[in-house]
Image (tube, rainbow, N blue to C red):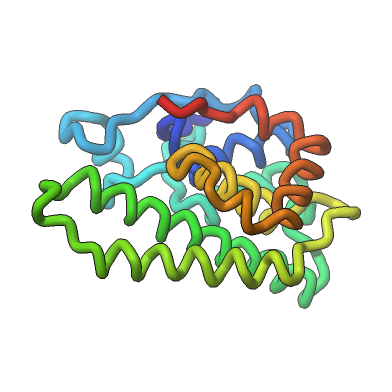
Length: 203
């Protein structure tokens, strides 16, 4: 049994859980809720960066970050399941994944700025800088939403998790400006039941 160290709100951990479901591997993974702040949590023994998600496979080998974990799971399932086989198709899927991961990174940094700094020390320029990344990425994707008629790939999974994270942490404010992406996400959710199954409701 593999061990996935993650936390329910993590969009990167959600990527792994959705990918595992699509690949038929959910039953081979024990998801262990992890506290990245606790120095006694086993996470730091597995991943010196102390970041989630981290996957520990049966022989004790440790795999991170989410992009590498998804590639491992794809190989474990036989290969070319959620990572396209064709060279340019693969690059396009991975590029979309990188863009979506960047949205998640920028969103998380905004959350951390408010969580880790005293209110009187909050650096608004930094928050605005990260918000700008998210806005530009969403503008780009709204102008040309990814096709989703064929096989679901890593880029689709990552984008769905990025939009889901914006729903969770930013009250879905993006939805009013990006109707095409709203429709895109609805289509993804309809095709991938694991998306709803892994959704975390705002506290």
